[in-house]
Length: 162
Image 1 (tube, helix red, strand yellow):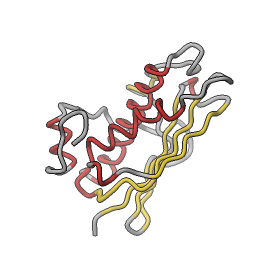
Image 2 (tube, rainbow, N blue to C red):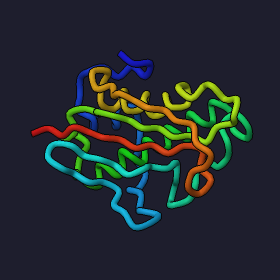
Image 3 (cartoon, rainbow, N blue to C red):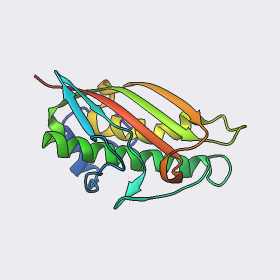
Image 4 (spheres, helix red, strand yellow):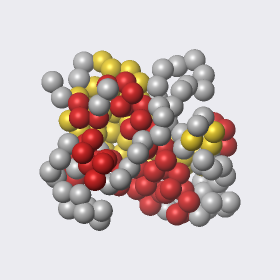
């Protein structure tokens, strides 16, 4: 059982409702690419930013202008955008069998070392929605800059049910 009290029971859409989470509108591309691409039973998402209504929810450098808690909140917002893009592409999150991989990029101060704690903002949300058994492999990378000045960008790969 996760900290939020959600158990293994229930599909992702039901878990969202139990968690009282309403997804934002599906994000739209900031350039020449698609938000989601399905091949076989895998769904790949483009980089998801912490944006609301096509505007950055926050900007700055984690460990400088933003603390770890703010970075974690930004990662959660990016994960919500990922769920919205997935739901928009598939029609429902219930077609997801598991989260396969997360790639999380963050703009961090040179001496910042708590990258995993920031990335947990996304991982924890996916765990709560898809279940503990769906925890993904994950890479967290510090970078010099990201689009729109946001502190976090997330990419995800999902396995789809047959």
